Amino acid sequence: MAAVNVPTSLLIVAVALLLPGVAASGEGLQTISVVTPATPTRWSAVAGGLMQLVDPWGDESKASQLKRMAKEDRFDLAKRVQQGLLEALAGRGHVALPLTVSRPAELVPGPLARDRLPQTALPGSLLDVSVEWFGLYRSGALESYRPLLAVSYRLLGAKGDLQRSSRRIHYNAPKDMGRGGEVIAATGDCEWQSFDAFPKDRARLWGCMDAAIMTVAERIALRLDGS
Image 1 (tube, rainbow, N blue to C red):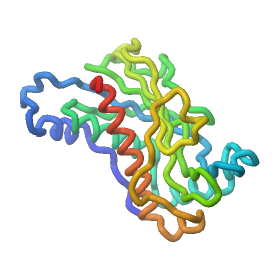
Image 2 (cartoon, rainbow, N blue to C red):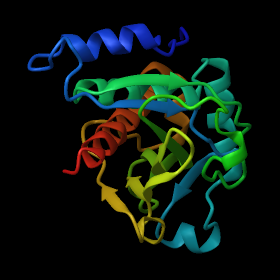
Image 3 (cartoon, helix red, strand yellow):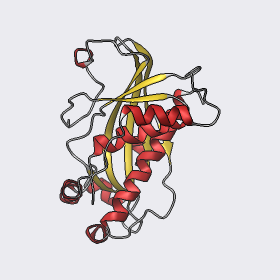
C-alpha cells in the first residue's frame, strides 16, 4: 500500500482560500498549525463482555500483529491523524498548516511539553493532539471488530499559552474508556467478525481506519468552531 504524504502548507492554504464563501484576502480565516500528534507505543485489539474481564487491555498478540501490518503497509498513524486534521480544518475555512515536532511514541501519550514548542512564535493557534488509544474493538465475543480511536486535543497560543483546555473524543470505545469525553458510535460497513480476516483485507482495513480518523478530525474542527 503506498504511503500517504502529509499535504504541504501551500496546498492546505490554497484549499482553504478556494472554498466557496471564503474570501481570497483571508478575511475571517483563523490560522491553525497542527502539531505532529502524539501516538501510543501499544495499539489495541479489545473484546468487550466477558473477555474484557479476563483481558481488560486487549489481546496483546493481535494488537502487535495489527501494528506490524501497519508498518509493512506504511500506515503512519501520526501522519494520517495530522493529515485528517489539516483537511478537516481547511474544509471549515481555516488556514491549516502542518507543524513537525519530534514526538516518539509513548505508552501513555500526553500533551506536548512547553519546552518542546517552537521557539519562534507562529501566527495563529497551535492544535496539540494526542492519540491515546488506537486499534480495534468489539463489544463482545459474538460482535464484530470495528476501528477504535480515542483522542485528546487542546488549543494553544503561538507562545504556548492555553486557549482551550483538553477535551476528549472517543470513536467506538468501551464505555469505561469513553467517560469524561464525547463518544462517537461506529457507522458504515467497517466491521469484521474475525481478526483472521484482517491480513487478507488490508486495503479495506486501512481505508476504514482512515475513515474513523477523518470522522474524529471533522468533529474536532467542528468543536473548535464552537459548534
